[in-house]
Length: 451
Image (cartoon, rainbow, N blue to C red; front, side):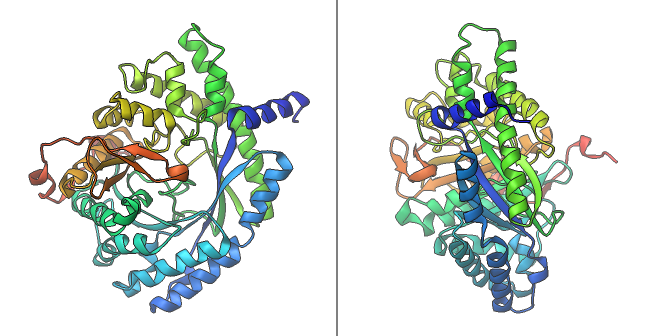
């Protein structure tokens, strides 16, 4: 039962603290759409997406009006597309165009799932698919791509890691007129999850049902506001307050998810608890960490604060939802968080500190702009480091990095909207090409041998 006080609290969270449901994402299985011919497969996939997701925007808008909670993004995720294009290797772009057209027709903000899962090995058709990613991202507006190159169970596919460094560079080059934004729609994973509602990494896993609704809630501003009354309080009180706040946020997300699933004739999948920031003042994960007592995010103590935040968010959210999944924690994208942008501009945070923080948060090196002349092997080295953190710690890690063509350290890039802006961050001047070019597969850690 929701009482009057619950209603007042929710209104305050929306009006004063930037609370929203960040995304409703409909996952759609397209496995039954596979045909030998590229155009036939593309046409059937287009029809399936349009028939399943034709009402998602209207339902989201109706729910937002009825419950007074803004629903910011409406998205679709599909079966990893490399599985769909296997019969017509070399013609992947035909499907990419159809997917983007379907997203435009349905009116969704993004469509995720132009993806490949190559954590253990890579077939010829998967390599062909991955090589198509730069062109696919350059000719589409709303399509996002991801590649899973490692897992705690299988180790790291270093051939795929090497290839993805090259693909990221090419994706940026093919969208140079918009500061390499193609790379901002591409993420490389270790331990990718099948029910992630957030872009650019969302895809509809093969273990999922026919049509599933996953919801991502977000409330950095709510958590920040709650901590402002705890000046001088012990760390125990801070953790307890975050936990209680996460419970309130997730409860609202669970309500929206259930209703959306009913109205869209889909299965309710999960609520993702992740605190996802925006470039708007009052909606920053970095500001939460600073409210705990840091002079600036990036200083000593940052990783400890982030670890506690992530844990408290999960503990509170799990109690509020019957199905928690996705990534669930705290995102630390540089360009999408006004506090992170400021810290990067001031030199308070660098790639080394970001890497340390990713050992305890939801994802990894996210929306980081680097010099356009960064070697592909250096990008692969960054990917390999993040995959190693994920593999050893049994957690999802990722890299979404933009080598901005024609720009270097000291300059800034403006992507606009939720993607925000970022200073170009320095990478190590020392190379790792000999390591990356070895290829092969890095063995899984000993703790993977659990059966």
